[in-house]
Image (cartoon, rainbow over all chains, first blue to last red; front, side, top):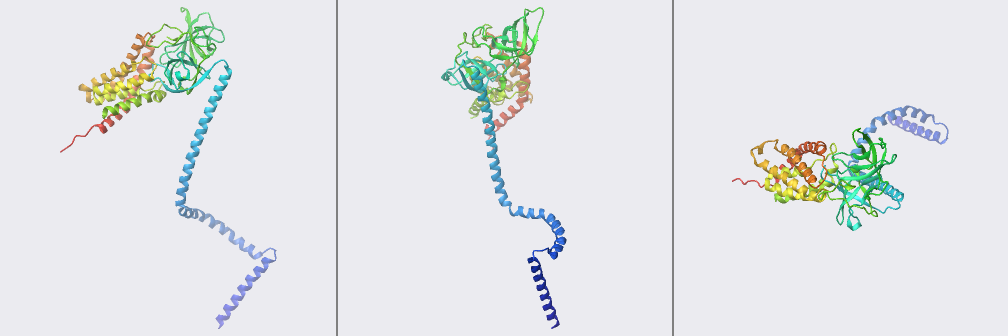
Length: 288
Length: 166
């Protein structure tokens, strides 16, 4: 009986306590009981939360593993698609830049009828320097037509088929272009050399001034190339007192190794077609 | 079967030499993988097979080259004939044979090339050509021969019919 009374008192007290809390809370004023309880509980809550967070994450990861795999796969696919788009965008940007330069080049040379062609191959031999382009006689190409890039002279058409053509580069040992030094107007002949990236300008009269850094242009003499196309820049000069002429090493203006697109000058009729190496030729402008 | 595989590979490799391999340079020179393939084929399959494959590869190279037509074919056929002879003699088993053949054939191939050009009326500066291109290319080709030779030998093992054991 005593025990039953004690329980009844306890229940009434608890109910009274709860009721008082509810009343205190309804008064909109400070709730000292909650404040004190918070003061005690908060640090514990913080530590516990910190300690259990990784565990919770592991549990959550395990639970979502199946989903994660699918999500990862989807993200991978999306990433690959985005990367492809980025590459294409970058390629378009490069192409855009190239076309811009060509347009600028074309507008700078309004009298020239230029046809853009893509480089599709190189000469398989290390001894010769030729390019293969994707334009041929169907597009109006003829032997001897000069080939340019936006930086300067590339070479000339040496062989034409219906849908492709071979371009003899100015660095080919058989190539020969009449040239002049822009600053001093000294003339000479620019030729290719076996196995060398640089060109050699021969037959420069001894009295003429040539210095490293001078720009070398086509002179137009001989009628096989138009005048004033940039060939390159003088790198070094060799003068011998006993020789009749000076010689200069010339770095081509165009990076011939990495060419992707070139332009063929369609409305220029060369005086002399380049000689096929098989037929042989005297050292003259075009092909030797 | 082996001849048609050799012809097909020679065809593809010759195109790749112009379109791709010529752009891959070491000290300004690209390895002549077509020549090496023809040499390896001649060493492993014999003179006749080497000549047939050399003919095909040379033809494609001629189409793609600015050199007089037939020059690459002639030089390749001659080089494959040399290699075929090398494969027949007593040094056949020597491990250095492919490398020696690669070096020697590169010299022969390029010297023939230059000779033909000179006969065609072109000015050839022999010193520059040998020093800057021919000798360095011979070394480069000797280096690459191990790759090409291993590939052709692997191909031979796959293509050759195995003897039936009773």
